[in-house]
Image (cartoon, rainbow, N blue to C red; front, side):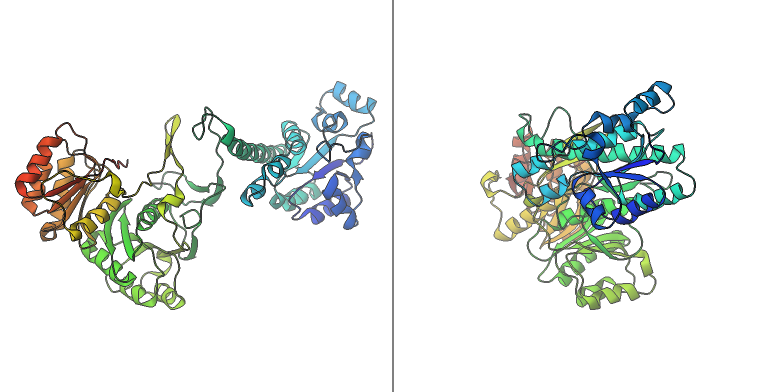
Length: 520
């Protein structure tokens, strides 16, 4: 065995490789490498020994087999506390490999770029994960580095006398996480061949932390924000923060709720959310009109809320938003005009407390179809996202009176909004404005009562949307007393005939959708 320590370097991501390798060489390490990594080091003038020279066995099968050799893995896996292991290395004339720097083939990037199946198969790394797992298992004697961002501090520790056991264990933890993330992506890609489809027996998902949060839902809870590898554009996960202090856990929840609702509409729309429920929603001929109508429907609840718009924020709407007496925690939009940004940044009393998020052009809900994960104590629920839209073919007018053209427009508007309100959910709307919301109530008639009370005089001539059927006709009676002209609901109650009869008696038009929109 030679006296020089040995480091094996084999990386796809070559950021920082030259500086790291040169530093190791200056510390007296003998460098082993393969393929493109070895070529990069040769080009940089850094002495390196090819793995095939170390093993006495060439790379074969177009590079599919390079490091899968007993001489490599014996040198990594030897427990140097055991005399028998040290003797085995001596018998084989092998030095222990005490540092392994490996990152894996760019499978995710290939998938993102739409590579063919054959190309994807070739991006499944075999030797790399094997090296990483071996080195991480033997962290008592081997430092394994999978992140280029770790090169600097690892070199610093080596120059200062070496890595501690705790530091090697940290590197091992990151290594196993790196391999687990990689394997999860591969399993996700192969799921297309699973007869159980998108709901397989074993669900492997991977998320990358993008932000440590100051705290969770409450100050005594830790939290972080994680993004899925293929997060679609125009979502909260991909939004760009242009201004303001860090987003909080609750900011992110509310901003997501606001964004997912505002993308429901084609014409200029504004949504204001508090505690994940909309307190203001309106359409307008312009985004300024939409904002003013949404705000004026409930200015008390709007204070400190989250605002989402589906059009560029120009100076005109920005001036309305920063008017005296207003304050918003987060404002989201496809983009912000430069002169609008200045207004928010210079608004007296706001400072960094308002966060501005640019989403890019909003995709419609049907382009964001997929699955949502909800954690439970000891488990998780995995469900299709509720992106189903208004479908004229499934609508059924069940009353004697048919909605007017204006009522049809408001029914469609209210139906899209109620989908985003916590159940039991009721929405009262008129003229493209939400005037009343009954959210999260334990009984439906209670939600109706809240929505009507909030709407007040605006309920007269308005429409009412319910996320689920009415179990009793009492909700229809309340609606009629308040002056509601039309109701939209899924239908499906065993008392539907009584509910319909109550609507007929009061002249209310009623539409069944056949689709329920529970949200918990």
